[in-house]
Each structure stands twice: as C-alpha cells, then as structure tokens.
Length: 242
Image (cartoon, rainbow, N blue to C red; front, side, top):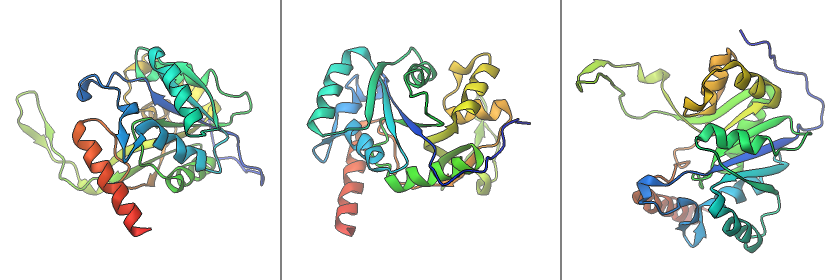
C-alpha cells in the first residue's frame, strides 16, 4: 500500500513541470523525425507544446530530445513564440532515461510532473487540465479512453488463450501526471524501471493507485505515416466545428 495520500490543498495551484518526451528514433517513420513532420503546416512538436503553453496549470516545460535535434528545436520555439520551455535536455537510451534526464532539470518548486509524448500533438489544454486536477486530488492520474475493440490474449503460437472483459479495459494515453515525491519514491523502489513502457507502471509497482481520466480518441500518437493523414482530418474537423 502506498504511503502517499491525497493532500488538502490551499487555493494556490501546485507548481507543475511538463516533461515532453521527444527523443525517439522514429523507426516506423523510416527514420524521419516525427517531431518535425508538419500537420496542417505546423510541426508535430510545436502543436504538442502549444497545448501545454495554453494550459493555465502548467508552469514550465522541459523537453527531452536527441542531441542532434536540440538546436533545431530551440529555433522552432523562437519561431512559434513558445515561452514556457525552460530547457531542452538530451534524452537517454530508453524512454525512462529521457524522463529522468528531464526531471533533473525541473524547478525545485515543482510539485507535479506531467509526462507527455511529444508525438501526441492533438492533446488539448482541457484534457491536460482535467488530468492535472485529478492528480492534484489523488497524487497520480493519467488520461485514456475505453477500448472499442474486443481484446484477445494470444500465446506464442498465435492461439487465443483468453478474452478480457472489455468493460474494464482502457487504452492509456498521455499526459500522465504524478506528485513529484511519489514519482521519485517509485523510481527508487523499482530495480529495472527502464523496461517500463509508461510511467503509470512505475506507480502501480510502488503500490499507489493511478486515477484514469476520460480523454479523447483524438489524442492519437503519431507513429506511422498514416497517422499524419488521420491527424490532419481531425484538425480539419475541429476547425469546421469551431
């Protein structure tokens, strides 16, 4: 059982550091860095950053990126007037190492980390704020959506072994938000945290519950070229609905 409990908060909002993970090698994009791909004329990473820039609860942003991409990213920040980015740090060999490198650069004032995939450019300030507010109450929260498809557990021979109840299955997205002290304690508690594919797993292993926040099916991750087409369609729909 976790030793961390929800705290009674004053009217002042906690200081929040957004950690944007943008250090992947974009293998499924043929080696082209997806952070720089354009979606309706705006780079993927910039769309992601502007959502956090707009979010009133976010105080600073730290980006973890490949070393060779950092100069270009700094130039982009200037071009698009992104002001909350405190620094861009070199990412690590794994996703978790990249996150650790970023949080080491966070302000001593920071009380919460909002960890987000740089390649999820369609996240909205509303989703970010909802997830932050949930984490402020429970110390750990993540956004996601209920799965639409029936999920099968399949063995190494490609034979179905089980069918989980779809009613209890969610696809977890980012941001994933955690109390700073809770997150650091969870990291210290786990022997091989680098093998985890998301940060919720760290907190689960530590024994603290993570609250799921209903997000949006629009909050896709840009992974393959087809995702760019889908993202542009979503943006066009949003513009038509506005």
